[in-house]
Every structure is written in C-alpha cells, then in structure tokens.
Image (cartoon, rainbow, N blue to C red; front, side, top):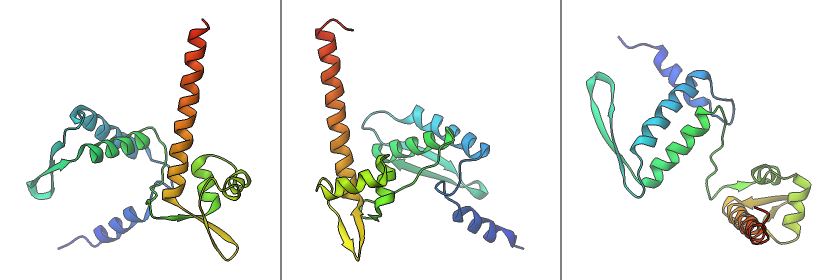
Length: 163
C-alpha cells in the first residue's frame, strides 16, 4: 500500500524556494556535504562523474559538464552559508525594483540609469520592463570597469611606493 502522505509532502517540498525562505540547518548541512563532494571532484575543464544511490538499491551514473558542476558548487556554497538566492532566466522580463535589487542600487537611481540610456528597456503602459539579458550585460560591463579601475589604482599605488 502506498503512503498517501508522500505525494503531498513532495508538493510541499517543491512549493518552497530559497527566494521564499532561508535555508534550515538541515538544508545547510546537506548542501555543505554536496559542496565538499563537488569541490573534491571538480577539476578545470573536466566533466564530473558521480554515481548516485537511488531507491531500491539502484545506482545512476551522472556526468556533469564543468560549467554545470561549478553551478551546483556555487549554489551549494550559498545554501551551506545560509543564504537565500534567486534564479533568473536570461529571457525574463524584470521590473525596475527587481532590477535595482539585482544591482544593489536604489530604484530611483536605477530609473535614472534607464532614462540615461545605459540599459535598454521597454514600456508596458507606464511600467518599465527590463530584459534580464540586458541587465546582466550592463552588470558585467560595470563590474569589469570597476575591476579595471581597482587594478589601475593598485598598480599606481605600487608604482608610487604605497604598497
């Protein structure tokens, strides 16, 4: 006889996301275990092969591409450190508040970025919508520029004997 609670329990598990709640101690412990396993298995540009024990003694072999293995490692690091996260598809359309939150800036500042033409957007009625891929492109360019400026400052300090 099947356990009638299994289906409802699975639904409850899938209804929760780390955008809705922070990881529990059990989540953190299990994510840390996965993080440790992945960290031992990952080597640059090499697929990661694992054998997973399934119910009824079955074994499944899984091979992860290097990028996918690194993604799982990054997610397990977030969860094991107790942080929530959000996964945003590249083709998603975001509100100004969602976009501002992703850049860690205020909404009014973000709207100024939009109005200055630094990030493309569309309008639906009076509401602005930003494609995630455009936001990510802006963020990558901004972060690259910041890294370059910091590197230049460190080089100048080194040349001037401040380091």
